[in-house]
Image (cartoon, rainbow, N blue to C red):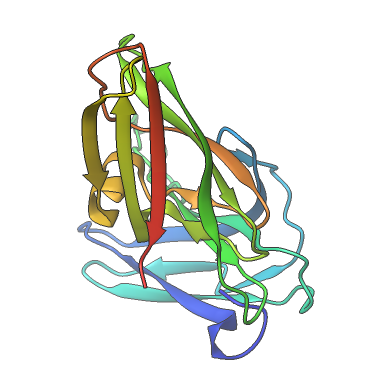
Length: 216
């Protein structure tokens, strides 16, 4: 979303694929972006309005929920929220024993200052290790703009050289490949985020460089 104009609001569509009515409730909480990822605050700051906040959706039907930014129109940098779509429990018939499986989805809503565009680059890269102990590139992705952006809306070029300066590995990750392996790769406004790339390198020695080219 943006702080002004038609992009101040959008719609979340919930479809009931069950054979009985579906009761859902939408709640909002702000989130903070850290160097390692996302942290939910548990606080509704009142900057997002959701209508309707609750609904009963009949089997096979859909319900539109409109989400609109109603906060400060002069944001210093992007703000981020989780809108939680929660299935509400159904009241059981007295005397019956039953287990209810309830679904709960979190929708990420990001609000950028009106007219601002992201400016993402890779400020540093080093050889780290993944959970299996294999060498992988670890980058610091920096966004110098007030508006958030996504690594998946660009390409990453990875080059490793040995201790003698000879190139031993090269690979380019497209936007769809980044999204499939990392997710969207959200980088907040004026944020630096440390990201481990899921690309095994041939050796732990030497150096690795990673360049980022945004989509035009």
